[in-house]
Image (cartoon, rainbow, N blue to C red):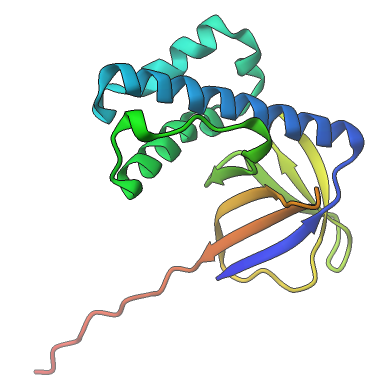
Length: 171
C-alpha cells in the first residue's frame, strides 16, 4: 500500500532538508560527469561516492544510503530513457525534490496511541507528521518530497508478508 502525509519541519530541519537535497544533487551531477567520461554505467561504482566523500567532508553529514542512492537514481534514469550519457542533463538543485530512504535511515515515533507522530530521519532530525489514517503493513520505503508550493510530504510504501501454505498431500 502507499500512503502520503503532510510533514511540518521546523525552520532548522527545513534548512537541513534543503541542504541535503543540494548535496544529493551535487553527487548525482558528479556521477553523471563520470558516466560521461567513462561512457558506460558499469564503471560508475559506489567507490566513486566514497571518493567524493573523501574530498568533500560535508558529505559525511548525510545519511550514506541517500548518497549511494544517487548512483541507482542515475542508473535508472539512464536505463529507463535508453539514452547515451552525453544526452543526459545535469540536475538543477531546485528541481531535485525527492529523498528516498529504503529500509533504513528513518523511524516513526508515537509516544502513545492516537498521539502526535514524528518521522525521525538519520542525520536530519525529527519532523512532525500529520497522519490521517492508520498505516498497515511493514514499511518498505519512505520518500521525502517538497512540492511546487514548498510544502513537505512523506510517501510511505508498505508491504506485508503473505504466508504461503504448502499444499498438503492426502494419503
